[in-house]
Length: 186
Image 1 (spheres, rainbow, N blue to C red):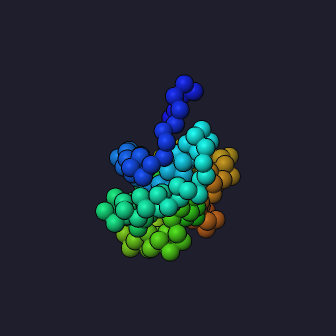
Image 2 (spheres, rainbow, N blue to C red):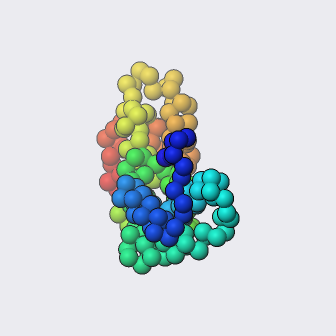
Image 3 (cartoon, helix red, strand yellow):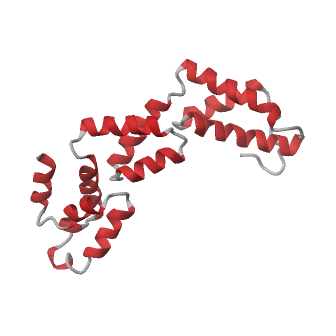
């Protein structure tokens, strides 16, 4: 990030490539996400030094094509990694798809990543909902004396995480933790 005393660097193809590599060293990114990062750098430079944004678009595209060819950018691998990570956090399939869309992953690649997740888990949404319920102490993971009064609140928490009503109801209304584990095993 630039400080008020230091102007942004002028945009050159080598600067864009170095900036992209530096960014990819620190963060996993999709092609669209890296493109947004590079275009923000272009915009700051153009605002300070003058010129047109369109003059640098070809250089940004060339960097993305080069890094994709070298294997540093792989949208399919990014989508699968992000899908697994969000699933481990207890996110539902709708929330996962929305996050992937926001990261610039195409719907086809998002579906392929969700299919990979389905191959790993019989019911990925149910498994993620149970993980989230365990983590946040919802439903059967809550003390029995508090369950009835917090049922609506617990259901809302799972719904906000992208789970459908049927999955939310199955998790929150399970009579015990053992019953949830049986649902996952079957």
